[in-house]
Image 1 (cartoon, rainbow over the protein chains, first blue to last red):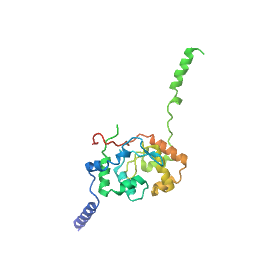
Image 2: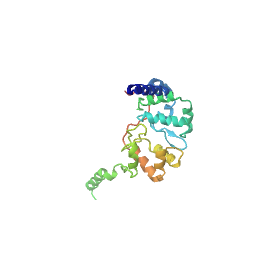
Image 3: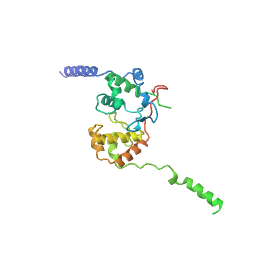
Image 4: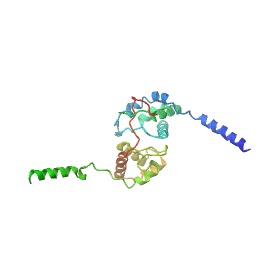
Amino acid sequence: MLTARRAVLAALATAFATSVSAAGDVEAGRIKANTCMGCHGIPNYTNAYPTYRVPKLGGQHPEYIKAALKDYRDGKRQHTTMHAQGLSLSDQDIEDIAAYIAKAPAHQ
Amino acid sequence: MNHSRLLALAIAATTLPAFAAPEVAKPEKAGTCAACHGETGVSANGMYPTIAGQYANYLEHSLKAYRQGTRKNAIMGAQAVNLTDAEIKQLSAWYAAQQGPLYTLSVHGDLKQ
């Protein structure tokens, strides 16, 4: 009985795991993150109105990057440019971008 | 005052700690932040961003957006609402000055292992 229950649980867990996007692909993310570099790949790059520096993303937690991108995309976090960028991203794109950022080289 | 005395005074002045870059004191309210963001802003939990070494004016912008409610987060909103402009500035400057893993991305170079 216990093993049967475990088997059901395992099957359910697998079903749930496959319903969300697959783990991020670093190489796919490198291409998808190209646009990000226009601002996030320049040291001290400044956001215009209000004026503040665009955040450093290298070394940041991938979980946080993913949550931030989804919030921008879904309009839960406000930023005109980031919302516009986010609109074209699927959950898989976000996984890929986060996987790439976690391994991206540093600006010298 | 003769020349050697003046020289001695000049040397003493340049070595005085008062002439070193002032270190930003840890703000009192940073104690609350530590629970999620780590003692010096290096977070151990992926849910919470690392803020050590992040740009001060970005941190300031974020805290003000949380305080104002334009950036919504139950935990951060509740914390930021109690902060004055001066406290936000102090907290942001202190975290920006801490050592951490954050860096600017580059399209050039090899991937990290």
